[in-house]
Image 1 (cartoon, rainbow, N blue to C red):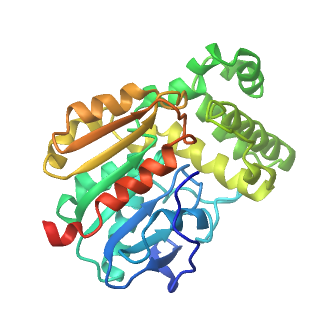
Image 2 (cartoon, rainbow, N blue to C red; image 1 turned 45 degrees about the horizontal axis):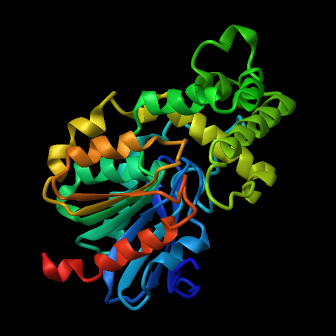
Length: 321
């Protein structure tokens, strides 16, 4: 039985102008007097689903959820080749998080990130350590190019048939190069058949490499052509630019987080992100605890329960620090 708090509706929502023509959808749930927290979703481009509200104790947290630039209910959407991605990068997302904190009048908050949201949480915390009470990080990533190469190329050794279909969707001359960049070019093609087929092929591979998750089912959101387009465009945009980070940037910045408590939660069978990524971060982070789960992949198993327990542990953290 997976622990969840009861479903709740937001007590406030809004659209925040963050410049560059972008508006962020945000919502808050829980108690106005609770410990402030922010949820950073995966992808990039996954959006904040209603289910994410249910990991926060509504009596103890004032939780903020929002859709990052270009996805979900934020506008404009990164949908199709006409979408301008020139002002969609990791530094701009970090600035958006800080703008949202200021807009909501929050001094410091607990940061909870999942998958890509972990990389974003780490970069944000390194830029603004004085604004972070603690971090809960699930399905740990750090934005290195080696992680992208692992997903787009090395995992072909585990799923050779599916990976060859994924690789062979790009032109022969590009199959030995940066596959994320090759897909990004297809997704920017003016021919609707080209970019729509590329979005479907990219999302089909996404569904393959998370299937070691217990009780895995195909992601129903990938049946939506708009979601496929937004998700594929944003993921390939970020990955083909090295997540807009210098190689090794997150690891190099870990001393800035030394005093911040954190729980890192990672499935031992997460082939999308091997556990050594979480291990190396933990080794450089005296204030962290690493939980490697023997029954989880990129989620599933006891993963949701451990996330909820870690967030419960940080309730009232602002009064203890």
